[in-house]
Image (tube, rainbow, N blue to C red):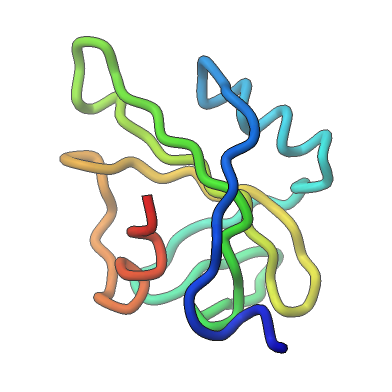
Length: 109
């Protein structure tokens, strides 16, 4: 079965107090690459991945105590070609503008 089709299960097995703590721990567990968002894809090492080209393995959401601009989501991502890394994105008023397909992929939280 192709793990990149249909819906996928995200398991949050760790608890982190900060974004940097989550990112650092994920890197020690093999999620060493940095992914960045573009409108309808993510980018890593000059490679472009559309929503069907990667899966979200874990996701962690952080809420600012007093400032909504501090809200962020950390995604542990694995691409079809085996790249494993981290994507950090704001949510709420801090969220990036995304295509509907990418927003659906990332809205699993």
